[in-house]
Image 1 (tube, rainbow, N blue to C red):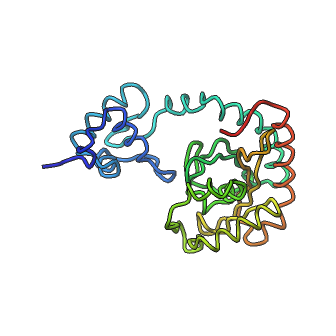
Image 2 (cartoon, rainbow, N blue to C red; image 1 turned 180 degrees about the vertical axis):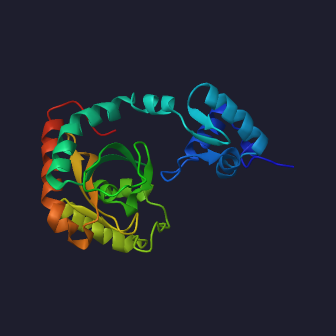
Length: 257
């Protein structure tokens, strides 16, 4: 008999529905109910029932036998107060960065051990990538994640880093000591790089943004196919955009949580 992995805790419908929504990854355009059930650790009968309810309120959409996230979910995400204000404030600098490099410019915040994409401005020379607004990536594999983590207090960093750093690609840094040394360099020069650590063939250069209290708030980056030369080629433009965004944010009430 099918049994939910969370039956012992008797979770409520909100928790189970959230597990279903969180089952989607950045690479997933749509999933079957069976796939959702497996990823969320739910019995298929439970998943079918919950999907119908979530579809009814617009948080998911059904297309034949496949399910995708609904427009209503995107609309609600845009209403998160801090991220909405941050996105609006930093948007001009992202567009400037995109124009200067002709590659995709990104804005992300840290949430636990992940980064969450808050904004993205596609560049004309950028390859198609499976990253989406609201999508997540493990922070230690990304330039923006490393740019933010480099400016956390030691106890804050220790609290979010998992004991084992997972590999997204063969190039992902998985040794904590190596990552610690890399973060020290990022803290010194203000720039972080992800060279094929989240996707083979793709390089990203990131820099942190700070609030008016000097606490790291978010990070911006450029994503492209420049390879190891990306830091020297795009680093100055990324750093300048981050500094300009920081100067603007330090005149506002937007601050780190």
